[in-house]
Every structure is written in structure tokens, then in C-alpha cells.
Length: 119
Image 1 (cartoon, rainbow, N blue to C red):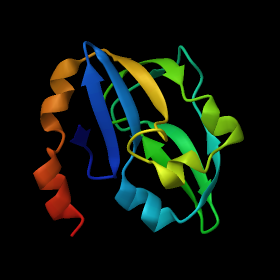
Image 2 (cartoon, helix red, strand yellow; image 1 turned 180 degrees about the vertical axis):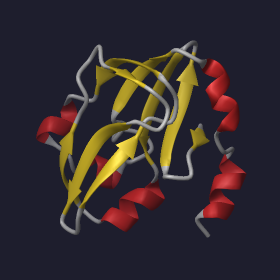
Image 3 (cartoon, one colour; image 1 turned 135 degrees about the horizontal axis):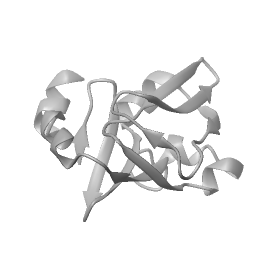
Image 4 (spheres, rainbow, N blue to C red; image 1 turned 90 degrees about the vertical axis):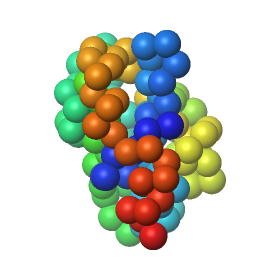
């Protein structure tokens, strides 16, 4: 996994990245009660707002960690947004995208660097 300073993660297999928010982000937001997912086929650029998360505390945007085209969304979150609360870095993934510029991964944080950022 690679991480952004705005608390998103991306795990890449082949040229497809699975994207979600970190445990730190989830704890800061509190209980997620609604997730507004992007449309499949939408093109996003690194840093674009991609998802809106609504919690009992506030609404927050989740940004695209890399550029690409959305190829899948986690449909389970439509009926069970609480999966982001219980498993933000696994079952609570938000969407998958086909990377348009894999070199953008180089600017993201490795696990150790991200851990230092949030401690």
C-alpha cells in the first residue's frame, strides 16, 4: 500500500489500484453513515475529490491518490457504509481505478513514512 498525506491509501495490482481511506482518517471522522461513490467510467486526476464520506461528526471528501479511470466501486457500501468503520483498509475499500500514470505512485508515502505522519 501507498498513502497520501490526506489519508487515502492505494494498493496496486497489475495496473489497477484499489483505493480507500486509512484507519487514521476513519477514527478522525467517527462513524461513517453514508458514502457517495463515484460513477464507474469517471476519469479522475490525482488530488481530485472522488468520494464523499458522511459521518456522525462531519462530511469529508476523499481524494484520488493517483490519476485514472474508475473501473469499479464497492457496491456493498451503499447498504452497509459501516464497513468503512470496521475495516477501512480492507473490506471498506471505496473504488478501483485503472492507473493512467503509474509514475504518480512514486510521490506517495510508504507505510513507515505515513505512520510517522500520523503519530
